[in-house]
Length: 203
Image (cartoon, rainbow, N blue to C red; front, side, top):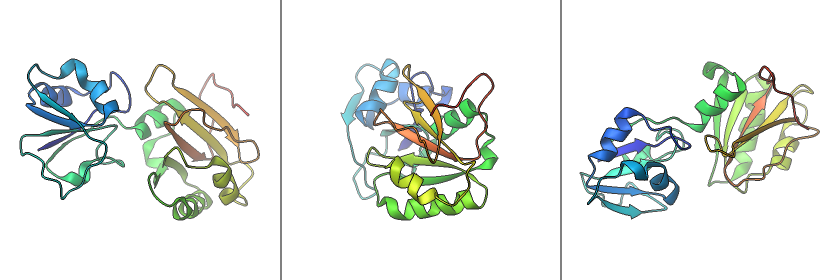
C-alpha cells in the first residue's frame, strides 16, 4: 500500500507521486484528491471515492491511497505503508507569507473539539511562535481572537483560503479586526507576521 500526497492544489504533484499514480491498479481517495490526479490515472485502474479511512479497514496491499496536501500533516499517513510526501498547505502559506518553516509551530483544529486547540495556539503565540492552524469549516476566527486577547497588540491573523487553487486568497488583519473566511477550505497563520514585499495588510 502506498499513501501518496497529492499537494494542496492543482499542479503540485511530485514526480514520485505521478509515478505511483500512473502505475496504480486501484486507487482510493476523496473526491477532491481524485480530481487533483485524474490526468495521471491509467486506463483500467479501479478508482473508489472514500471520505473516511481507518487503520482497521481492509485495504489491498497494492492500493494507492490519495492524501490531499502531505500525508504527515493532518493527512492519511497514519494508515501506514509506503508514504510519498506531498506539498502541504503549510509549505504554500509559508512561501506566500515569506516565513521560514523553522519559525512555525503547527496546531491541528480539524475535526475535533476546538477548545484545546485554541488554548495551545494562545500558548504558542505567547512564547513568540508563529502558529499555523489547520482548520475545519466550523473553526471560529472570533473564538480565536478571544483566545488571543492579552498575547500582544502586534499579533496578526492571516486567513489563507483555497491555497494552490486559482481563487487562492490570503488576507491579513489584527485581533481587533480579523479577516473572516469566505471559503470552507482555509487555514490560519497567527503571530508577528510581516507583510510580504508588495503586499498590504487587509482589515
